[in-house]
Amino acid sequence: EVQLVQSGGGLVQRGGSLRLSCAASSGFSFTTYWMSWVRQAPGKGLEWVANLNEDGSATYYVDSVTGRFTISRDNAKKTLYLQMDSLRVDDTAMYYCARDEAGFEHWGQGALVTVYS
Amino acid sequence: DIVMTQSPATLSVSPGERATLSCRASQSVRSDVAWYQQKPGQAPRLIIHSASTRATGIPARFSGSGSGTEFTLSISSLQSEDFAVYYCQQYNNWKTFGPGTKVDLK
Image (cartoon, rainbow over the protein chains, first blue to last red):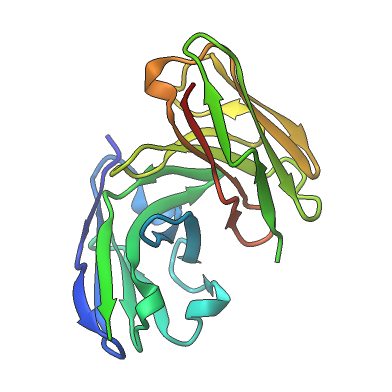
C-alpha cells in the first residue's frame, strides 16, 4: 500500500523558518517518481507549490515561493522535504505532499503551517 | 501561466440526478487534465486523470471528457457520498488548479 506520512507543521512567526517532511511507505518505489508539494489556505482552493524529479537534480517552484522555499529528497530514507524560509502570513495553509504523475493519486495527510505576525 | 476556470461555483443536485461540472483552460493543455474530489478535513482524492481515465477504485458513475481547453466531469447518478468540492487541474505546463465547484444537496 502506498502511504505518505507527513510531519513538521506548526506555528511560526513571520520571517521564520519551518521544515516539512513526507515519509514514503515501502509500498512504492519512491526513487522512480517525481514528488510535489501542494498547499491549501484556509477555506481556499489548491495551489501547487513545488516539485522535483526522481534524483532531486531538477526542482521547480511556483513564483510566490521561489527563493524562499527549497524542495529536496533523501532517497535512501524515502523522504521528501520542504524547507520554508522567510515565511509570510499568506503562506499559512495546509501543506500536502503528493506523488507526482498524471495527476496526484497519492497524498499525505497534510501538515498545517500557521504564520503569525 | 495557464489559468483554469470552473463553472458553476456551486451546483445543487438531488440524489440520483446527473451532475455536470465544467472546466476551461486559458490555453490548450491537450488532455493533461485531472479532476479531484475533496471533502472537509480530507486530502483531495484523484477521480480522473488524462481528461477521461478513471483513477484506481473510482466508480463508473464518474466520467470525464474533453481536450484542448474545454473539459467536463459528469456524475451520472449522484450518491450521498459524492457531495463535495471538485477541482480540475492541468499538468501540461507547470500545474495549476481551478477554483473548484461545490456540489451540494438541493
